[in-house]
Length: 528
Image (cartoon, rainbow, N blue to C red):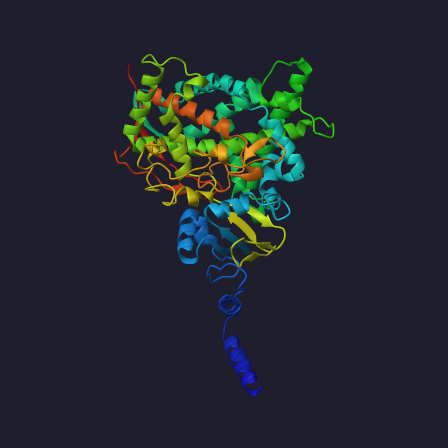
């Protein structure tokens, strides 16, 4: 005890010589050093053999949060090279187990409800943005009914009616937008694509009445909603922070517009509308309850938000990629002339099937620029990973990263190259096997409560997810993106402002990746 008392005495004497502020600083540094020391010691001496390897980190709560958040795909690649397909890292104080590759996609995305849960992860983000009683703020069985309501309204007949609407919206936007005045110019294209995609989606899915109540401020409102998905809101979704205040104001504003429109339709006795709002107004749950107005409004927000994320980001990347490859843009123009006629008649739904390169632009862009880089699930019970010694405990979060397999050279030759022609089966860069695109008929189908869908979990290409939470709007997104791309190709030639073939970097500030802004391109109107 004598030595300990001597040390304590020396420390006390040393501290007494310092100012109060300096004493506090020394104590803080000492506590920080102790936390780091014991954290490192625990990683070295107390590894659990039945859990995946833990990514080394100095600080116990921060863990790998910063390196992951700066560039998730790069983090996944580097950790995969070091630890393999399965590893654990600390994210905002939570142990998060990543399982990469096609087996990992299937294990997580097709996991059983008793084992993995999306609601427990995402409700803190989605409920303030979408609203109460929908998506992850309701039991899973109710969510499956809600998805069925929306999916059955997305028919071929609906898509046939949507293409002319999208065409008119694109033409109208380009005519009135000051960014495209004159014969040529420079524009920050992600801003334009965010507005075009929100206008086309709102008009198609929610009707002309809703569309008429929105101007360019609609894109701003949806941007405010989108900022509710910042990663920090996993912890601070409740806090009165500026972006949360704007999120809540936007949610109330948009929901009120929807509910007012519903009341107007009922008051007028209108019954001939065929949009999503009309369909939901006439939908009934299995227990006989009609869908309440506030749920209709919140489902419409969720549907538009889900589509807006992927479509806005993907369409922006498409335009940026075309600006970096003017040769592809010219090939797209020639494809339309050859398939549809030199006079380029008004675009119809049936025309899209005649434009394989136009379709490939979307496929290839989604492959390289997956809008969602991380899909998380809460672990509900001790979960063995087949074929390994690992058992994932309920204290962990599971994370799938389908974008990793979509950029894996095992399946895609020259995986980092944006080359739309690879989707031609005769191309030397054609994917070796992509079930969702090549062998979908052989893939297992399952009905989670909203119709048969391909499980698709073992495909390396999953831009719209897999399993019970697979995106129901993928067909609409494809129609929307193909139509927008075809119309812009008809009207413009693009190139990079500096004439290079470079592409701008990716912004990972939100859970949904997008181009870093400003992302400017040079545009020139076609003549003749």
